[in-house]
Structure formats: structure tokens, C-alpha cells
Length: 80
Image 1 (cartoon, rainbow, N blue to C red):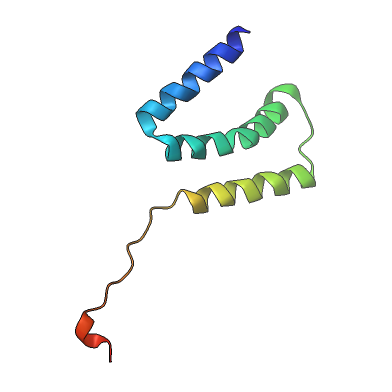
Image 2: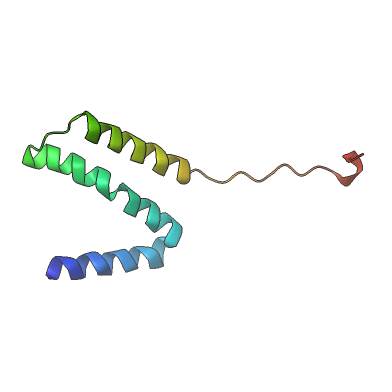
């Protein structure tokens, strides 16, 4: 029960400090941390399927967290 309280408090604290978008990015990394932590600390096997899942999740998080680029605005005179 205490761990659930700490997790919830930490999550809302992160939202307050980092904003919802950045906190959601960290939440998306939790499965990666769980898989790697289980492998490192508990000796769980990290087979090919889990490795592919970790890689896909990592790429998705990296793409989603890239800074947005402003669209190039053209001068109105260039539209003919």
C-alpha cells in the first residue's frame, strides 16, 4: 500500500514540476526499465521478443519527445 501511495504522489509531483507531456514520456519508459531491471537484478531472460519490444518502445519515446520544429512560413508574395 505504501508503494502505491509513493508512486502516485511521485507521479503527480512530476506532473506539477515537468508538465503532463514530459511526465507521460517518462511513464512510457517504465516498461523498458521494468524489463531491463528484471534482467539485471532478477536474472529474468531478455529474449528476442522482449528486446524488439524494448527497441520499438525506445524509438517511439525518442520520436515523440523530439522538439517540435516550427513550420517554414512563406511570404504571401511568393504564392502565385
